[in-house]
Image (tube, rainbow, N blue to C red; front, side, top):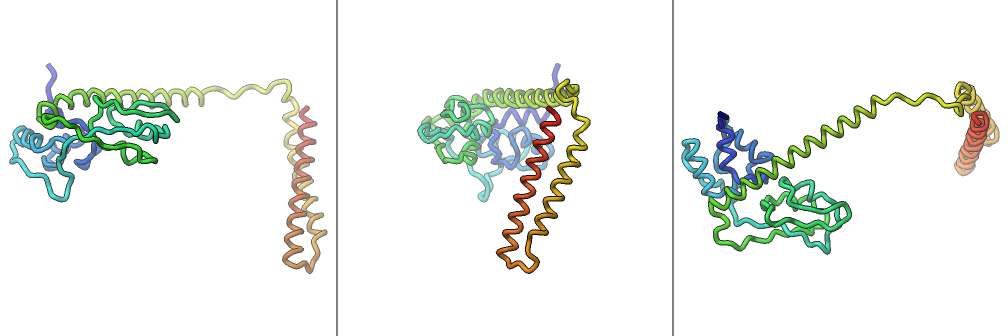
Length: 255
């Protein structure tokens, strides 16, 4: 029989919006902080005052009001994308903790209303500000029963998203490892002249050196700033010509 830990019991009372308003990266980290006694129970605005009372009862603590200088409870709102303004950047999709936004790169995105938790995490990354929050017009939307019903679904979707991200990371690591393990291809018959590459490189360097010497000799000793600039340009042209000639010689040798 599985033993339910205190962290799991606390997490079961949280709304699973993963919004971060409590100061943690999600509901589970906040539950861990509560179980360890590191945080107070009044830092979950989506859970509301009912959530504070539920946590107080579980942990045998007095119910606390929300701190005035921290986020306050408010009616839930759903994210809605103005589709005619969406540029398909996918940043909102990456930010959504429950995969409630669908779309593809450079294609219009849309929010699945029934899956949206109202966490607001999609607002900040949107580069064109095309996401609005529309209040939910239902009198019982903030009731404890509704909050817990949504939490159960949101937890499943969040867990599924985290599992998918873990699989994707493992697959990427495996592909990189397989690619690194592939031996370098053996030289083909067409690359038999490869041993002469060092001598070709030496010849190219010698051509560049001679070109630079010629450029120095051509630059007047008492040149003005303008003539110095022209000398530099001539030297650069000489070097470029020499490098092109050397590359042509190398290509001909390899052929």
